[in-house]
Amino acid sequence: MLKPLGDRVLVRPSQEEDVTASGIVLPDSARKKPTEGEVLAVGSGRVLDNGQRVRVSVKLGDIVVYSKYAGTQVKVEGEELILVDEDSILAVRE
Image 1 (tube, rainbow, N blue to C red):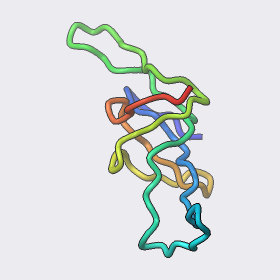
Image 2 (cartoon, rainbow, N blue to C red; image 1 turned 180 degrees about the vertical axis):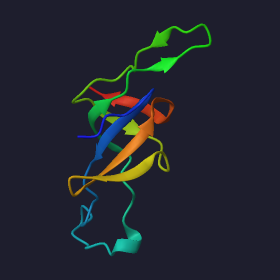
Image 3 (cartoon, helix red, strand yellow; image 1 turned 90 degrees about the vertical axis):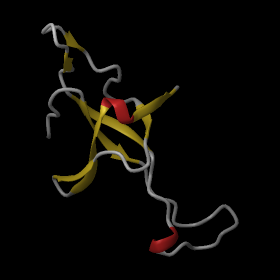
């Protein structure tokens, strides 16, 4: 598995919608990029100017909502994942 550094978070994006609620099959060009997913790994946190470390506010298993164009796509063990900065995470689903 990949271990994020600093305040980065490794997320498994939710599946893209292939069919609309009314049953229309969407082509690749019309599909929306996922903006939520499950947290798989978190970094150790951000280091402040005074040397103190601030832990990441999300934990393993959280379902998070992140910015639409956030992060870097990575392939880990054949699976497409996204590595995002904690600042790009907008909310945690409860």
